[in-house]
Image 1 (spheres, helix red, strand yellow):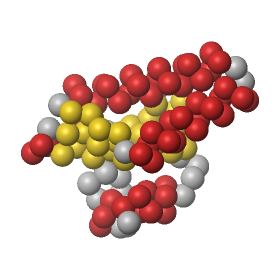
Image 2 (cartoon, helix red, strand yellow):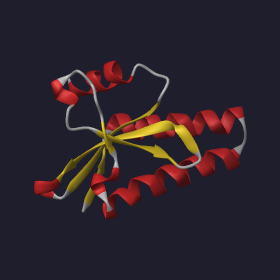
Image 3 (cartoon, one colour):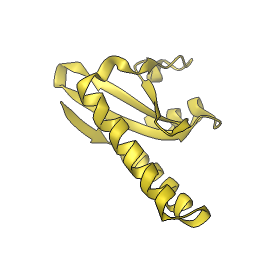
Image 4 (spheres, one colour):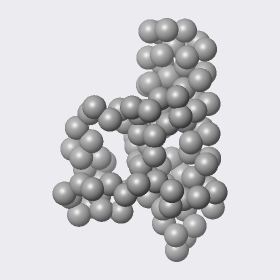
Length: 108
């Protein structure tokens, strides 16, 4: 199974790590990075484990999500392209954000 991370997702992961580095300390930033890495890698074993998103937009119908261990309000949004054996990490967002709008912008 090939794992791919979109530019938006990679940027979100780095920005959150930078925030934790400045707001708390390096150990929190390190825990964040390790938790995200573990969550993404876990999808290789069971790519269908994420819950299907229930957005109104048809362009987002195939998205799934999982939470990040230790950071339950943060969500990893991904697509499992089974025919090509690819997991595409679309975005990493905090659940309090306007998810459908942000994810829809990535589809444009």
